[in-house]
Image (cartoon, rainbow, N blue to C red; front, side, top):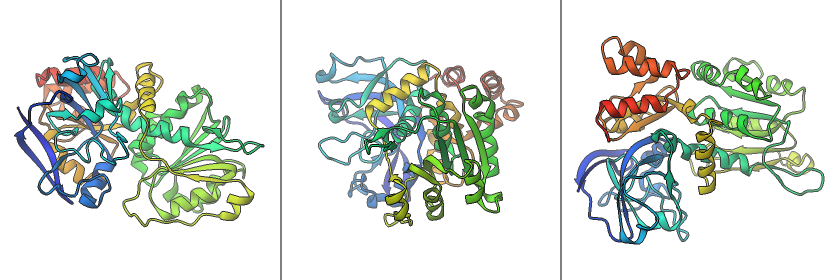
Length: 419
């Protein structure tokens, strides 16, 4: 059968093409992709090409399909998997397979499987590793966003403290202070949102950014009042306007520093600021993925020794964390939709990916089965003056606090006759 997909041929070389998919084998599964959210990791893959450790070296001859935050419907199941999966059911995906030590990952490594496509073939190792998940949610986009949310959950699970007896106590410090540096971007919103659902909550979350528009959007989506209702003080700080950001942030903790710090910007000075602000037994997670393989920053090893500070980094997530993201979303305990600022169709993927750093707002959610320019949710009302679809979408989103939602998704898919 024919499919259309965005494929990578080399660094800076993305192409939207129609081509023939082979028939599936007995140990493969054919799927129809309904949603894919674009990740900064795909932008880094585009920049690096074959220098990326997950990218095959022969993509100039055997291009790979990009996109790894995807969800959709199962269309056809090979004989081996027919007792476990059925045609017609929805799926979610854990793209990081970790299959027999291979770095191969969906959206980075496979010729016939990726999220920016109409149809894709799940290779046997996806099912072997338990990475193809049954999904019964009422929206596809929540399944797509479970992947970035799972990375955030993994980051929170990885942080740790020693307590008084050098036994690792996993997770954030209960009643402590969290600092999220560079935290008003799309992933940052998830990093702010997740601890609000935790039984072991912090007392304070401080979020910094240098972009006033991003900070204002974050403050409107995750309000101080909403955090207060969860028993948490939430503070947003524009570090670009601060005369002494170190002292300003330190003063918010009355000089005690921060128990858990997440660095979401791969900037040397930001990482070093985080290290300086750690409290005794504090933990810093360098969550930002740098493009430069030689990226370095200085850390205070005196504090590491005498103040028991901890430095770690996390990348990706486990399947269990992805399942938790799906569960929390289904229960309404987290709102992954706070990350979404734009929607679009398959035809806008290349330009959106190339300009991901320059584009304002949060996550860009793609519906591969349709053609649509990248469109900001904030523009729905204005567009609705001329286009009835956007008028309806605007009204629906206003009923959901301005967030993308399952009702809006259903309206969009019905309008474009995606079944």
